[in-house]
Length: 605
Ligand code: PLP
Image 1 (cartoon, rainbow, N blue to C red):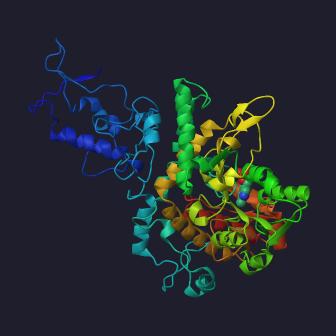
Image 2 (image 1 turned 45 degrees about the vertical axis):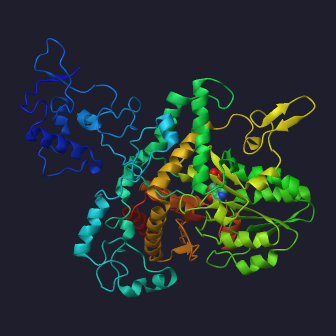
Image 3 (image 1 turned 90 degrees about the horizontal axis):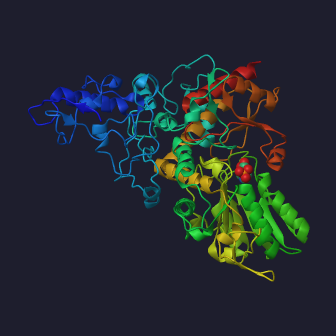
C-alpha cells in the first residue's frame, strides 16, 4: 500500500501546485500526448508519482501511521491512469482486465475516456465487462495533426476547387494546387475534389482514428505501411483485438447447451453480437441474422437451401455484370443442376448498371435477382433499391451482396426491401471467418436447412429430425463464437464513428485520389461511375499490373493487382487485370500523395 505524507492544512486537499501537476499529467495522457502549456507538469507525467500527489478521499490512518494519508487502492485501475483521476472514471471502465502497460520509458499509455452520456455503453457490454477505453467517437473534436495542418494551410494556400491559381506542391505530383483549367475535366465528371478529407476543423480526425489500428504502425521495406487493399480485407482496431482476447480470457465456452457460467457468458457474447448485427443492418429481429463464415458461404447457403427448393427447370436467375465470382458461381451451379437460366444485367462504359436493360430481362419466370451493392473491382454503387423494387414487381426474390458496401455506406435492409443480404466480417474491421446472412423472416420460414448436425435440431430420432426455427436452423455445429463477438465490437466501433462521417470522409478521399491518379499521363482509370465508393482500378500501358503492385510494395504501399475475382467485369473492359488501390476511413491524403507520386514515377520509366 502506498502512503504519502501530505500535510495540507486543508485536511488532505492538495495545494495548487499539486493540482497543477496533476492537470499537467492528465493532459499528457490524452491522445497525441496533448499538453497544456498552462500546466507545468504537462508532458512529463512519468516524472510524477501521482499517488504521492493527491488522495481525493483520505482514509483513516491505521494506528501507528499518525499523520499519514492512505492513497486509494493501488490495484484495480489500469496502470498508466492516475489513480486520483481514475476514481472519477465511469464505472464501466474495466477494474481488473486489460491493464494498459506503461510504455517504454515508463510513460503511461494515453487513454481515451468515454463520455457515457453521448456514447452509452450497451447493456451487453456491461454484462461482459468489455473494456471501455474504446475510442468510440472520442477522436472527434480533439485537435489532430490533420486539423492543425488544415488550419495552417488555410492561412497559407488555396485549395483545389477554388478559383485561385497556385504552383504545384512537389516535383512528383503537384496535386494540391493546380490551375482551374486542369481540374475542369475532372470536375465536370465527378465534381471538384474536396479537401475536407484532409480533416477540416470539427470534421473527421483521421489521425486520432489511426491510433486505434496498431498494424498501421508497421513498416514495410523500411517504409511506413500504406494499406490500400481494403477491398480485399480491412485492418482491425484495438477494440476488436481486445474483444477477442477478452472472450478467450473470460468467456470461452461452447454456447447454448450448458448450465455453467462460462456457457452463459459465451452465449451472451454470441447472441449479443447477433443483436448488434441486426441493429447495424436495421433488421426487424435478431432472428433474421444467420452467422456464417463470410459472404461466399452466405451466398452458397442461400443457393443450396432456398435456391434448391425454389428454383426449377426453365426458371431464371438474374445477376449483374459487376458480380464477384462468389455471386456468380453458386447460381451457375444451381442453374446447371436445375435446368434454370442465368441472365446478366449489362453495364455502361462507366461501370454502372443499365436499369433499362434490367427491366427488359425481368419476366414471370424470374425467380431470383442477386446483385452487388458495391462492385469490388470498380467501386460502382449500384441502384439496389430500384433493382429490388423492380424484382418484387414480378414476384422474384432478391439477394444483395453487401460485402463491399457495409464498411462504406449505411445499410437498412428493411428500407432496401431485399429478401437476403450478405456480408463478410473481415471487410468491415472484424475478424476473418465470420460473416452474415440476413434473411427476411418470411423468406427464412420457407427456407430449408442446408447443413445438418448439432445446434440446428429440436429433436432427433432415427426416423426423423425436427429442426429449430431460424436462425439456429441454419447454424449447424459449433459456430465461430469469438469472432462473432469480434464482429459485434467492429460494428459498435463503426457505429460510434458514424457511417455518415465515414462515407463523407471517404467520398472526399476518393475524389482526391481520383483527381491525383487521373492526371498521370497514360493512366487509365477503369470504373468511372458517378456513384462510386473507395475503389480506384487502373492500368498503365507498358507496365504489367503485377509489376506495378511489386513496385508499390517496395515503397510500403499495399494494393491488389489481378482480376479481383471478378473476371467478367474486367473482360467487359477488355482487361484481364487491373491495379486496385481501395480505401478505408483510416487512409489519409498523405498516403494518396505517396501512391500518386510512386505511380507517377513508374509511369515515367
Ligand atoms: N462479394 C464481393 C462483392 C466481394 O468483394 C467479395 C470478396 O472480395 C465477396 C463477395 C466474397 O467475400 P469473402 O471472400 O469474404 O467470402
